[in-house]
Length: 306
Image (cartoon, rainbow, N blue to C red):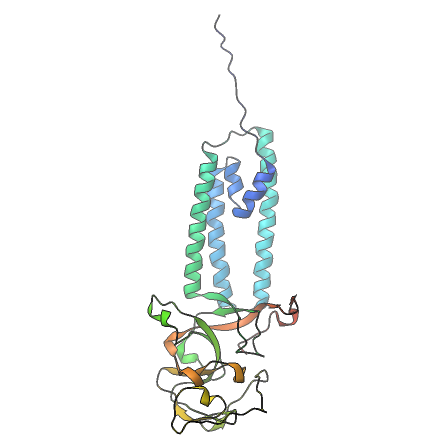
């Protein structure tokens, strides 16, 4: 007699530790792992939209408190989904929900597509909205210190650049600037804008004949003043402490580092084209003192656009 018993093979057991690991790669991936393809895709797509909205908010409200709020929201979302994914894994095993065919293929595919979309959003954001920078040189001490991490907005209107502004720009002397817009990003303070005159007398900077309003953080050694040792005007080290009066051309900026005795700037290599300005630092969102191996808590949240 033929055996007509139907043997039902239970789906493979879903592992909690696998769901936890997948959560770190994408909040929706554990849903796919547990057989919920459509909800998993929706969650992954929603994360990309949320990421973009976070960046737009940062560009519109470049304040340190907003960074804290967004970080808190992001961490909260992660832990909420972590708990939900763990509960879903337990529920899936308890109810014996059938698994998807080619589960890991779908997980990998959705993960790769999400990563590509995230990278696309990052490129869009960095090109148009906001970008983070790290100070790796001492040319802006004591305003900016080595190890300061800056948040800069990129919605710079050339008409609104004023004396005293701190700007991010493409270094004019970098040969890579001729290739697809590449080049080194530098940070300096605007001393004079187009059509203004600039001169330096014994380290005192004059703009349009008036002393430049120096910030209190400018670093100057008043005991070592170098003369202008050239009979004719030219860019070079002779302009460090004394420089003849010059006129800033149309569409150009004259910039200097706040660490005046240790800064490579317009005194040495000339003007910055306004078109090369790519951003304005707004605040310090993190600062690390590598010499003392500590976080500079007192610098976190420091505004730079006052």
